[in-house]
Each structure stands twice: as C-alpha cells, then as structure tokens.
Image (cartoon, rainbow, N blue to C red; front, side, top):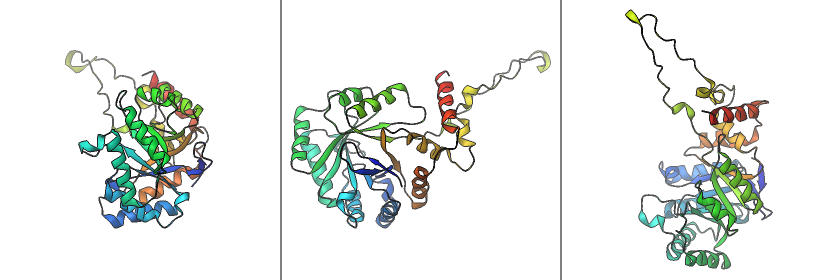
Length: 299
C-alpha cells in the first residue's frame, strides 16, 4: 500500500479508504471483522463509516482496537441516509446525536473527519455549523468534510470552513469536478475520490437501421461503427488489467487526490483493489484515456 499526505495535518493516509456499512455486514459480524482485518493487513489505515449505524460502528471499533488509534483515520458520513428519515437530519441535535452514537458504540475516542453528505444550498443552519465547531473544540471530531458532486459544492469549498472534499472522480470527469478539486487543494483540503469506475459496457448498443429496397435488395449500407461508440473500449482489452483497476490507478495519478474510497464485501475483492495502487499504468495508457475523454466529449 502506498501513502500520501493527509491535507495539512502532516499525517500519511493510505491510497485506499475502505467504506464500511450494512453491505459489508450482510454475511455477518465475523465476515465484517475478517474484511477489516484483511484491510489492516493490506496497509489500509483509512476507513469510512457510511452512517452512524451502531452495529457497523461497533464492529469497526473492535477491529481498530488492535492498532494504535493515532495511526488510523475514520470518517463518519452524516446525512447519507439508509432509508430512515432521521439519517438525513442536518440539525445541530441530529448531527450531535449521530456522532455521539458512533463514538459510544465504536469506542474510537474521536472521529477524524465528520463528513456532510450533499447538503443543499440552504440545508445547513448556522446552529448546525456552531454545533460541529463545538464538537471540534471538545475533541469529539478533528476535521470537517463535505461530500457531493453538485454545483453547490463549489460554494461550500469556497467558504474555507471544511478540511476535506469527498467527490466523484473517474476517468471521464468533467472540468467542473477537476476545477473543484484544484480549488479544494488551494484551500489545503484533503481530497477523497469515490465513484471512480463506471462499467461502460452496461449501455445498450445502438440498433443499426437498415433501409431495404425492392425485394430487400439495394438497401442502405450498414452504419459504420464510429470511435465514439467505443471511446473507452480499450479498458476491457488491456492484458493483465481489469477496467476497474485501470480506473483506480488512473485516479491515483492525480497528486491532488489523497485517497480513493472503495467498497468491498469480501476479502478477495479487497485484495484485488488493494493491489492496484502498487501498479503503475502500462506505458501509453494514460494517453489513451485522455484521447477517450476527447472522443467521448464530442459524442
């Protein structure tokens, strides 16, 4: 596992951040612990609690209790939702309760980054921000983060009130996302990337249109396949690489990205993801990706 600076804290954070929540616990508590222990053995020192679910918090806390707390980093997502209306509560009372609940069941002592998930333009009251600042003052949380891909994120980044930006970022990210990442770095914010891979094969192929002449003869020619339809087809034809691994490694070529958030529900998938940061992209592949972006944008 490779490591990068964690914002201006001077600490080192692993290239991968493991997202942990209900999906990781579907096969039971022991399977969840096994996943976390495998992550630690792989050198991952950054973990994201998807919400303040008591069971997930307790399991994560148990796994991390075996290492020095100062050597691991835990973020808690506020407002991500898990089907319960209360999870979308950005009130001072709601966020305080969620943080206290996660701390109580995990025994972690503090949350390194409290992350607000896609708050609306007017969804954060001044009382809520004051409550978060109060929790920082008491040491329950260390840093504040903001997550999302909408235009409102630009306004939140520009405030200078947040220490971390969690943003979608893949090989075809537009200039808005890329400019936001640069702006975050200019604010000395740590940048976490998520949604780094989209399976572009899932799109239904365009059906060819044929115009037939008399008795089915003399019809129009079959439409010529264009490069636009296969702008990123090379992702699935690169030997010894999966498309997901290429996308992950590509995102990590951006020095502004501190860590990439990944999801895994079993140790085999985790091992595959953990191996990606150790590999350099094959020569010429980065140029192919840039060309694919140009072709795709022209579609």
